[in-house]
Length: 166
Image 1 (spheres, rainbow, N blue to C red):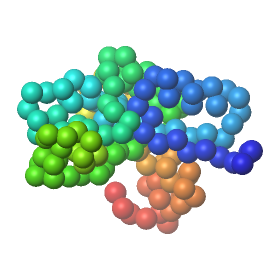
Image 2 (cartoon, helix red, strand yellow):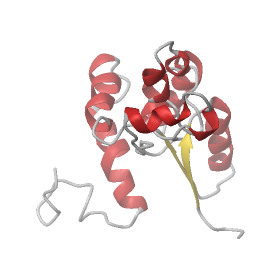
Image 3 (cartoon, one colour):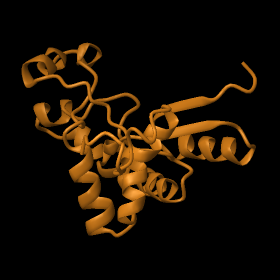
Image 4 (spheres, rainbow, N blue to C red):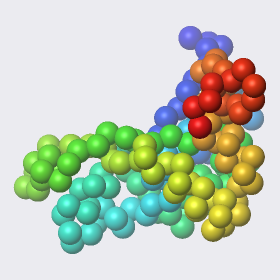
């Protein structure tokens, strides 16, 4: 499979982000996506005494330390080492998550994120921190994905002739 592109999902740790950086520096065709949770949540959520709250934050790979891994993910998203932001949208309700209350191995894996991705990312990385410009936000949430999946400029662009799916 030499020369084939690689699309890496759920980049959640500094180590995974560094692997993406090394691949890009070597000229490999690698695209990497952190999740909204990796950019905005802390692993402490999974250790809450409230089982329902903790279970709602269980995903694979797990959420890491926001002040360490999350900051690297943010920096690498800004510098385009990480290409676009995804979610781990595999939602289970509280009743379904309770299946793992006595045995973690059967706890359904996945968290919310689809509905929250755009407003939370804007609030945190554009409005609150100023890390991303509005144009960089559009790249990370829309235009870069459209380009990678070969639907640009029909998608990922606000222009005459493009789909009006804002």
